[in-house]
Image 1 (cartoon, rainbow, N blue to C red):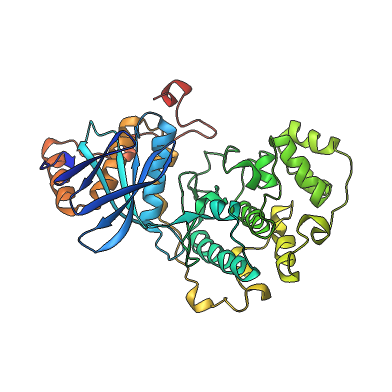
Image 2 (tube, one colour):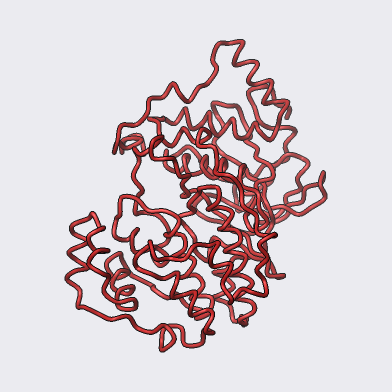
Length: 404
C-alpha cells in the first residue's frame, strides 16, 4: 500500500500477533512477541536497512482516552529530544492510516532482553558489583534527564530495561513532566497519581501541590534498596499504609516538614501516628548492604525532599568511585518548553491527534513536507496557540471528555 500526503506509511507488511493485526514498513521484519500490556503489544524485529535488532511497540486504540493520548504524545516528544546511552531511544514512528482515521501508533526502539523487576524476582544472584553497575547507569541516565529539566515521575524496576551484559536503560516517560519556568506556566499543579505506590516519595503521597527532581531520587533510593534486599522496601497496600511504613522506618517527620503538607487530612493523619524514632537501616531493613550503599540509602531516603541528595552528587559518592567518570556522564540544556505547549492549553482529541501525527511525520521528512504544503494550500495550517491557555487550577479536560 502506497501512502499519499494524508498517510504516514510506506509499503506495509501485516502480521497477526496474539490475535491482533500488527503492521510494519517492509524495512522492518517482525519476529516474535516479547511483551504485552494495557497499551498493546511489543515485538522483537530487525531493521533491514540498518541491520540491527529493534523492538516494535504497537500502542492500540491510542485515542480512546484523552489522558492516554496525552501520555503517548508526551513520551514521543520527550524521547525525540533526549538521547543518551542509558535512556531508551525512539528510532522510528509510523502511523498506518489516514490522518483523521489512524488509531494505532507504532514505535521502534532499542531491543532489550528484560527489565530489572524480572531480574530481582529471578533466582539469579546479584553481587554488590552488579548492584553498583545497575545503580550507576540509573544515576547516569537520570542526571541527563534532570539536566533537561525533566522529572520522570514513574521510576520503578519495571521501567528499567536491562540486557544480559548488564546494560540498563530508563523507559516509559508518559507520566514525566517538563519543568516550566514559574513565570511561563504555573497553572497545572502536580498530581499524586504518579509512580507505582511502593516507589512514591512522601511529598507525592502527601499531595504536595508541587514537587520536583527530589521525588525521582526517592524512587532511586527505593529501587537501590530493592536491588540489595531482592524485595520491596516499602510495599504499602494503600497510601496511608505506605506512609506508615515510611515513617516507621525514618521516624516522625519534623514539625516544619509537616507544616509544608497542604492536605489537611494527610497532615492530621501523619500527626496522629505514634511518635517514632528512625530505625538504623543496617539493623534489619537492609542488613547485607555495604557501608557505602547504606550511606547512599540514608541520603536518598529522606522524608524532607530538600535534604535528598541529587543524581549528580550521588555519582560522586565513594561507593561509585570505580565507575564514576565525569567526562562520560553527559548533560544537556533544558528542553524548549515551546514544544510542550499542549501541556498548558485547553486541548481536545483533535489537537492531540494532530500533534501525534506531526510527531510521526518527523521520521518521514518527504511526507512531512508534502503534508505541510497541502495544509498551507488548503488554508488549514494547525497552530496550538489557537487553543486557549488554561486558567490557574483549571483541569485540561472535563470527565466527559476524558471518556474519549
